[in-house]
Every structure is written in C-alpha cells, then in structure tokens.
Length: 337
Image 1: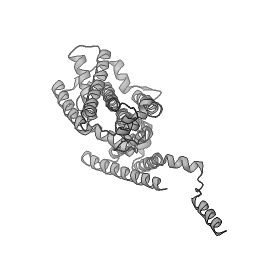
Image 2: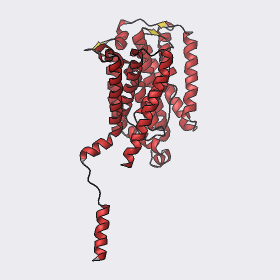
Image 3: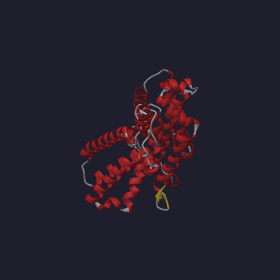
C-alpha cells in the first residue's frame, strides 16, 4: 500500500497544471501585447502634454513617417532573423534617390525606366553584399559598413551635395497623394507588410530564414542553401531601400543625398524593440510593425512637445533603450512561467 501511495503521489506531482486556452494565446503574444501597452502609454503621455497629437492631420503625418521607416524595416526584419545585420540602408536610400535624379536629369532617361533601374540595381548590390558575406564568411557588419561608405561617397560624387529636381506630377502622387485620406505611401507599406509577413511564415524561403538564423550548420545539414538564403535577405533589403529612395524623391520633388540620415539605426531599433533576436532565429513582422509605430510616435511627440533637436536624439535613444530592456525582461519572464 505504501508503494502504491508513493506512486500515486508522484503521478499527482507530475500532473500538468491546467491553463486556459486564453492564457496560452496571451503567452504566445506577450511580446506584442507588452509593446502595444507601451505604445498606448507613450501616446497618452504625449496627448496630455499636447492634444494636437490626436488630430487627424498629425496622425496622418505619424503614419506617413512610419511608412517610410517601415518599408525598409520589413527587409531588415528578415536580415536580423537570419542572424545578420545591415547598417547600410540609410545611405542606400539616399544613394537610390540621387541615382534616380541623375538618370533622369543627367542621362535623360524616362522616369519610369530610371525607377526600375534604381530598384534592380539596389537589389543586385544587396545580393552581392550578401554573397560576399556568406561565401567568404565576412561578418555582415563589416560588409554592410563597407557598403555604407561606398553609398555615402557615391551619393556625394553624383550630386555634389546639390539637390537634383525631378519634376513629374504623376510620380509625385505616390509620395504626396492619398486614397480616401490615406497616403499612398502608407498603402504601399501596408501591402508590402502583408506580402513579407506571408513570405516569412508561409513559404519555404521564410522557414529557411528562421532555420539559418537559428543554427546555420544544422540548416545546411538539413539541405537548406545557406549562402543563397543569406544573399537573398540582403537583396530584399537593398531593393526595399531603392523603393524607399524613390518614394522620398516622389514626396520632395527633388533627389537629395540628405534623406534617410540615421535610418539604419531606427530600422534596427524597430526590429529589436519588436522582439527579434540579434543572434537570429527569432522575430516577427508584427513585432517590427509595432516597433516602427513606437519609434515614429516618439519622434513625433518630441517635436510636438518642443524638445530641441539636439536633445531629441538623446531622449529618443533613452526611450528606445528602455523599451528594449522592458521587452527583454518580459520575454525572459514569459519563458520562466
């Protein structure tokens, strides 16, 4: 009887605790929920200090700013999930803008042809950078830092630091126009978000990105083409940087190398805030979307509250650091539950 009692006691101790399906769903999305709460908290604080924040015109400005950041960030998310990093996207966007202006104004190419050439060129350069990283095992930080310098130098050589006018009412619609009050650039960013979310979750390539980021050797042993996967995520980011450069020209009406300054850091921060691991293998487009909104709201709020430009970077950096730390703490606690 004693032995039987001991067995029954052991079984009862090992019996799993019941948890409701609702808790399972919450736990699975704890990162996104935490970010949303933080985003709402920041928005409430800004509104208390300046009620202009909730005006329709200002919210449209926030969404437009988020769209320009988001388009690049969708690609950056795949790069970071793959265990890589790309610090070249800011100068890449500026170079793409200047390239478009040069092809149209200096070479006399039709705007549509020039736009296609820009996106294809940026995609190819991104692929080459990714290929070099994967083939010769050069750290992606080093590879993309070299590209950063190349893009930055080329944009200055081509433009001589002088804005190049690109006049086209049809083209400017994409950067300035709207559909039922929603800016076209926001619609473009939303469509690309849905496409890349599907790619990351529902395709062989998407699963390969997660596998390579999680364990490249195991992925290779499983038959995944690690070199091609790594090169492709950089190609995607390059192409999206090219598209973002076109949209900047469309909005401003000129091609200037002064756009997208610091975009690479904002993009990386958005992905990390969204819960992606810099070591690779973990992350989501949903998290990156919330990260993009978080950064855009902070930037807008600092302007509305009259924080001077010198202090904005300090405040923005501190808030982003706090958000990342809170995200890491909550993620660790959710694992321990």
